[in-house]
Length: 342
Image: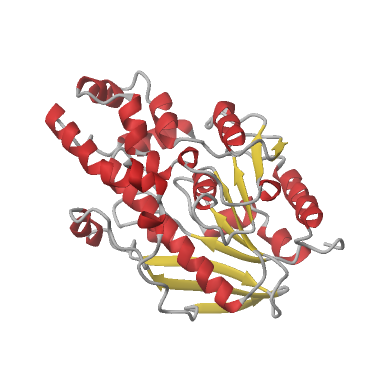
């Protein structure tokens, strides 16, 4: 899987060829991660409008309720004016896809699920997150969000996740702005229909996004990042050590410090979480070969050492993932978010 992800990542050409272009790129990236923006991230992450279309494109009855597919026009507008034309060429990214498993009566708790890099297929993640258990046995309303450039939002001619995150610093920053704006609009849409507490859980890239969203939106009642990197800039730099792409970047004047600064806007380490300490749960895998334990440790320390749980298995083969669903159930009941009978 590491080799496959590496191939996806390196398939894109390096976006700059001269030292001057590197300087121009970093100057453009400063609009996202300068100190003023990091102090007030709402300037980037507040959606300029909310979802206009509320009705699902299709719904079907499932055991316990309904499964609905929403296809919504994105509320996001690019920050970088030069990115607007490029975005229009990526067919499919301008619409948000959300799958919702909902009970006839509003559930006591709603959860938004975020998938990892390079995937996004609803059926795959229905199994990964044990959505049947979350929906029927725990009684949650469950919402599965498809990230930009993934799954149903993959532009023609590209693999799922190939364009985000990638070595294109501006596109990656913009895609994280788009993701957070869409998720915040989704929270507004859900809370307008159902007043129950709501939280977010994500795996890998979804866990990273989960931790970021928990640092931006104070309406969340809980956050559960799973096998999440603490800094994508550091993870990419570590994983590309000795690769031609990093050798070329270094020769043009890019360092880990400058790369980290260019991507600081979407790192959870750049902010303090807005969720109470008792409502943060970090989950990692005992044999994760893709996201080093040092990343989970860094997020755990930055989050003031909240509750933490380790399940057996790796990043892909999560053989013990049902254990973290049981831990999730215990945690919800202890917090009073679910009744003791759940």
